[in-house]
Length: 124
Image (cartoon, rainbow, N blue to C red; front, side, top):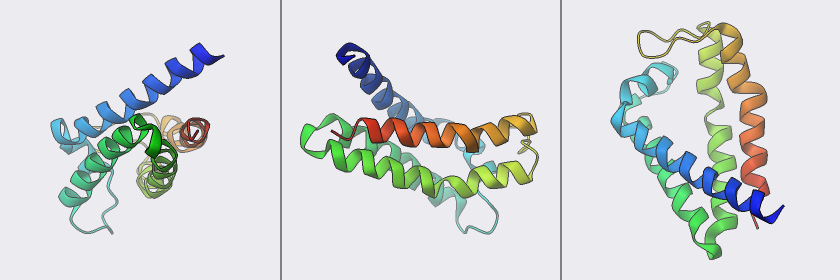
Protein backbone atom coordinates (compact mmCIF):
# COMPACT_ATOMS: atom_id res chain seq x y z
CA UNK A 1 0.00 0.00 0.00
CA UNK A 2 2.91 2.36 0.71
CA UNK A 3 4.23 1.98 -2.83
CA UNK A 4 0.77 2.62 -4.27
CA UNK A 5 0.37 5.76 -2.15
CA UNK A 6 3.81 7.05 -3.23
CA UNK A 7 2.95 6.51 -6.88
CA UNK A 8 -0.41 8.17 -6.32
CA UNK A 9 1.30 11.13 -4.65
CA UNK A 10 3.74 11.59 -7.54
CA UNK A 11 0.85 11.43 -10.01
CA UNK A 12 -1.10 14.00 -7.98
CA UNK A 13 1.84 16.42 -7.99
CA UNK A 14 2.38 15.85 -11.72
CA UNK A 15 -1.31 16.36 -12.44
CA UNK A 16 -1.39 19.81 -10.84
CA UNK A 17 1.98 20.77 -12.27
CA UNK A 18 0.94 19.88 -15.83
CA UNK A 19 -2.54 21.37 -15.36
CA UNK A 20 -1.04 24.61 -14.03
CA UNK A 21 1.39 24.89 -16.93
CA UNK A 22 -1.40 24.07 -19.38
CA UNK A 23 -3.26 27.24 -18.33
CA UNK A 24 -0.41 29.23 -19.86
CA UNK A 25 0.29 26.99 -22.87
CA UNK A 26 -3.36 26.53 -23.98
CA UNK A 27 -5.32 29.37 -22.38
CA UNK A 28 -8.11 29.46 -24.99
CA UNK A 29 -9.56 26.17 -23.78
CA UNK A 30 -9.83 27.57 -20.29
CA UNK A 31 -11.32 30.89 -21.44
CA UNK A 32 -14.14 28.95 -23.09
CA UNK A 33 -15.18 27.18 -19.87
CA UNK A 34 -15.10 30.25 -17.61
CA UNK A 35 -18.76 31.26 -17.16
CA UNK A 36 -19.54 34.60 -18.81
CA UNK A 37 -20.88 36.07 -15.56
CA UNK A 38 -17.33 35.98 -14.13
CA UNK A 39 -15.31 39.07 -15.04
CA UNK A 40 -11.80 39.09 -16.52
CA UNK A 41 -11.45 35.50 -17.80
CA UNK A 42 -7.78 36.12 -18.67
CA UNK A 43 -6.97 36.98 -15.07
CA UNK A 44 -9.06 34.07 -13.76
CA UNK A 45 -7.14 31.70 -16.04
CA UNK A 46 -3.77 33.03 -14.84
CA UNK A 47 -4.85 32.78 -11.19
CA UNK A 48 -6.10 29.22 -11.73
CA UNK A 49 -2.81 28.21 -13.37
CA UNK A 50 -0.76 29.79 -10.60
CA UNK A 51 -3.02 28.15 -8.00
CA UNK A 52 -2.51 24.70 -9.50
CA UNK A 53 1.26 25.18 -9.61
CA UNK A 54 1.24 26.47 -6.03
CA UNK A 55 -0.80 23.43 -4.98
CA UNK A 56 1.83 21.11 -6.48
CA UNK A 57 4.64 22.95 -4.65
CA UNK A 58 2.73 22.89 -1.35
CA UNK A 59 2.28 19.13 -1.71
CA UNK A 60 6.00 18.59 -2.25
CA UNK A 61 7.01 20.25 1.02
CA UNK A 62 6.18 17.91 3.93
CA UNK A 63 5.46 20.83 6.28
CA UNK A 64 2.88 22.29 3.86
CA UNK A 65 1.43 19.08 2.43
CA UNK A 66 -1.72 19.28 4.54
CA UNK A 67 -2.28 22.92 3.51
CA UNK A 68 -1.68 21.91 -0.11
CA UNK A 69 -4.27 19.15 0.09
CA UNK A 70 -6.88 21.45 1.59
CA UNK A 71 -5.94 24.13 -0.95
CA UNK A 72 -6.63 21.65 -3.77
CA UNK A 73 -9.99 20.75 -2.24
CA UNK A 74 -11.02 24.42 -2.02
CA UNK A 75 -9.75 25.02 -5.54
CA UNK A 76 -11.73 22.06 -6.92
CA UNK A 77 -14.86 23.38 -5.23
CA UNK A 78 -14.17 26.83 -6.73
CA UNK A 79 -13.94 25.24 -10.19
CA UNK A 80 -17.45 23.73 -9.95
CA UNK A 81 -19.12 26.71 -11.72
CA UNK A 82 -16.96 26.00 -14.78
CA UNK A 83 -18.17 22.39 -14.81
CA UNK A 84 -21.80 23.46 -14.38
CA UNK A 85 -21.38 25.96 -17.23
CA UNK A 86 -19.96 23.20 -19.40
CA UNK A 87 -23.01 21.04 -18.62
CA UNK A 88 -25.31 23.96 -19.49
CA UNK A 89 -23.56 24.31 -22.85
CA UNK A 90 -23.93 20.58 -23.58
CA UNK A 91 -20.18 19.92 -23.40
CA UNK A 92 -19.28 21.95 -26.49
CA UNK A 93 -17.43 25.12 -25.60
CA UNK A 94 -16.37 26.12 -29.10
CA UNK A 95 -13.47 24.86 -31.16
CA UNK A 96 -11.17 24.33 -28.16
CA UNK A 97 -13.29 21.94 -26.11
CA UNK A 98 -16.14 19.73 -27.27
CA UNK A 99 -17.05 16.63 -25.35
CA UNK A 100 -20.33 14.70 -25.22
CA UNK A 101 -22.90 16.05 -22.74
CA UNK A 102 -22.49 12.92 -20.62
CA UNK A 103 -18.74 13.66 -20.48
CA UNK A 104 -19.46 17.09 -19.05
CA UNK A 105 -21.58 15.44 -16.38
CA UNK A 106 -18.80 12.94 -15.60
CA UNK A 107 -16.32 15.82 -15.16
CA UNK A 108 -18.55 17.21 -12.43
CA UNK A 109 -19.56 13.91 -10.86
CA UNK A 110 -17.83 11.59 -10.16
CA UNK A 111 -14.50 13.04 -11.38
CA UNK A 112 -14.55 16.20 -9.25
CA UNK A 113 -15.49 14.13 -6.19
CA UNK A 114 -12.70 11.60 -6.91
CA UNK A 115 -10.14 14.42 -7.25
CA UNK A 116 -11.27 15.85 -3.91
CA UNK A 117 -10.91 12.45 -2.24
CA UNK A 118 -7.50 11.99 -3.86
CA UNK A 119 -6.25 15.27 -2.41
CA UNK A 120 -7.80 14.41 0.97
CA UNK A 121 -5.99 11.05 1.00
CA UNK A 122 -2.62 12.80 0.66
CA UNK A 123 -3.15 15.37 3.41
CA UNK A 124 -0.84 13.52 5.81
